[in-house]
Image (cartoon, rainbow, N blue to C red; front, top):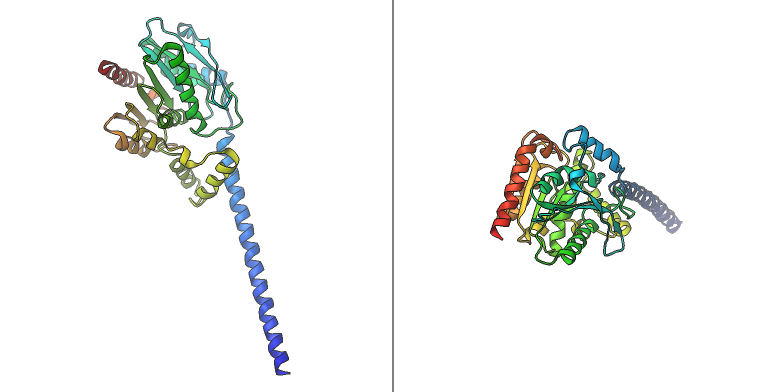
Length: 319
């Protein structure tokens, strides 16, 4: 009788333990499911952005007075380049008859090559041929999603190689990028492309730090970074480690001009300061007051152009 009571008590304790265990397991599974659903949603939001078309991006800069309505002086010719993975990158080349060199310009996230015209016009007027293009998944270019500077940085290298093959290894080539385009051109330096200088405007030092900042703005926990990184690896074939422009420029000797708005809330100015701290032996930095993300040129057009041209001329003088 006594043994039977002990057995019943033991069975009761086992039932309670199993109930608690499976309840806890159910809650953990639910929490992990919610966690990864949020991570998938965030990763998809990053990789499949709502894009603008070329007409809209062009007309907006005309309305702002950043480019003239008539840009026929650029004599744009369609030049599409096939990337190493077969992706067709669509762009336009403006050849300058007194070519000092070639500058390749990369636009920002969700935008198109038309957004690079505001920079391209003054570089062309200074004697450079310019190549503007739609980054993959943007504008008219191919591919299924954005990789925030991973695949895009390899595209930069493929474009550089195209022009080196066409004009010879001694041709001067510079890179210019805005926002994600800036991250792409900086990140390309880890592949050691044969370029002479880089102009970067409001680029991020690393994708991980950018997403961490966005999560903080959205009042979401930084632990989501782990899940997002896993989703990027499994679904989009890259990780945060693949997009660390700060390490690419730090380990390169290519001269770097850093331009950033002091009031940038999308990519905080600390990214520019960190980039400069890592590269100050071969870089120059200019912070523009009262300027939000990608607004430095718009707010300080003449000063911006002079800084960029003076920087390039100093590089050419050394050569």
